[in-house]
Amino acid sequence: AIPLVVSIATERAARAGVLVKDRLALESMRTVNTVLFDKTGTLTHGEPVVSAVSPAEGWTTDRVLALAAAAESDSEHPLARAIVRAASHLELSAATDFRSSPAEGVSATVGGASVAVGGPYLLERRGLEPLPSTWDASGGTLLHVIVDGEVVGALELVDEVRAESIAAVQALHERGIQVVMITGDAEPVAQRVADAVGIDRVFAGVRPEDKSARVAQLQSEGRRVAMVGDGVNDAPALAQADVGLAIGAGTDVAIASAGVILASDDPRSVLSVIELSEASYRKMK
Ligand code: ADP
Ligand code: MG
Image 1: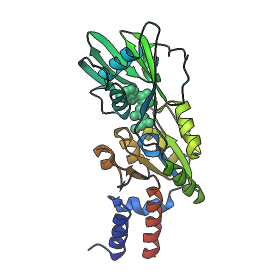
Image 2: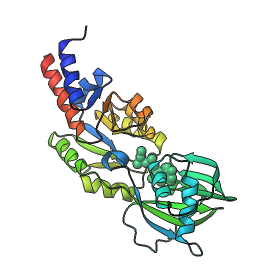
Image 3: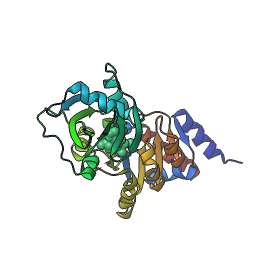
Image 4: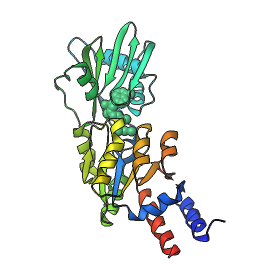
């Protein structure tokens, strides 16, 4: 039989929108001294919007956007969906040979041309330079569009910070918990979000396969880590953390790797989990 304290805690948890998959994870939560948030979709809304398109000389905004959207049309990444949405008024050519690389971006053949869209790691691997910034960037995620080996334009995408993220970080600080952010996004974007919500420490430009190593790094510093994430990329890191929390409409992989699932995508629900953990501990004593 399930001990009474456990069923009470589970019922309370359900009411708070917290689904406990692993009871030990809930118990461990009260001893956590570090909360590691994934940036995209956790601290931010995860619904980026294209805020600027900058074509290279000889190219037009529409042409760059149409090629980028065609190449991204088979990708489920939030950045890809934003690009496709921004190009909804344009006629797109069909794309074939679609490939995606989680840290870099996507590539495809569009109308006989080889098109790639991605971030700094894509440019780095191809030995290409970013476009000289002749435009007023607003601190969002910068992607470049490459056609047949030539950089033909840049796109900027802005993903708004959730207002609740600021309150969540503040409440964690009041409990003496260190708050860290991890992201595959570039340093300047990461730092802008971190400053906006009051994050203590930032891991930026982290490749998907390196996220769990960063969790292990924090643990080797003696920290007990709860990680909050929603993406496919976060699954190994969620599993590595002392407590893995999958937030909102997380992906199936993230949900499978987490001990606790947060039904709401409000980052403050992490506090509910801590409170539940403490409450069930008090009852057990
Ligand atoms: P996060 O860790 O913040 O969730 P991701 O790991 O999903 O971010 O993506 C990190 C970076 O990889 C993006 O900022 C972008 O540079 C690049 N990237 C990933 N997927 C795509 C895509 N479909 N199109 C363009 N760039 C992408
Ligand atoms: Mg992600």
